[in-house]
Image (cartoon, rainbow, N blue to C red; front, side, top):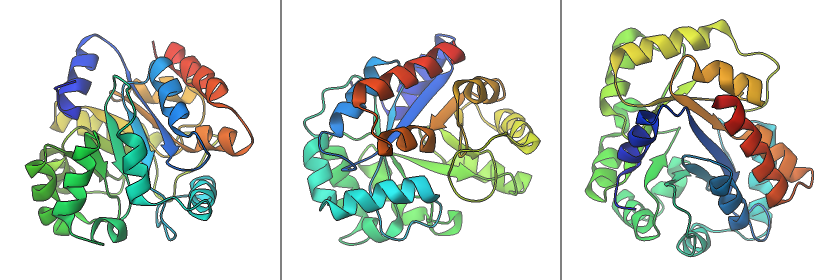
Length: 257
């Protein structure tokens, strides 16, 4: 694969395909990389890998539980990258983590390590737009797409700047607050999707609260696709195997298509 994350997603979108990006917390179980393979085989367009952190400001109880389990098992950034380097999936992999892990050495070293392991994208949700310059430059220097988040509360001017500076895709939040499964998608999500689509041709994907195939299909109608995290991690924490998680992703793929 030679394309960037953004080039890959735009090509998939060009096939008339709503984009599907499932999530797994790295290190949550032994053999977690089998979950990544199952997602790719089930029709994912990219896979988001959560690098566990002890104090995640945007993660709800499910992702926190998954991260806690991974940390308790001794998961480290170095160990994750070693396992990622062995993955042979044909879709881009995106790291999601927090600033503390990024700056432990330096942003440049962190981004270089991600790229060396085969990762194509990076999400750092606690890095504010006003302070993201150094990280954006370091990511760009390594050919890593830094994905920025857009919230329903953001002004149109701020949304415009986010769409201009984000790479890979624009991560649109369906709601304010933390990640987690929800019974309903708020109406503000559709408005945000329309506004972002009016500002950029870059892919726009919804995340936070995408809880089932019907919600995924509904949200994809207002943007280019979805990121699904807590709904999958809850199943994994309850004992689902990689094959069963792949089957659930396949059901989302069918609903989107």
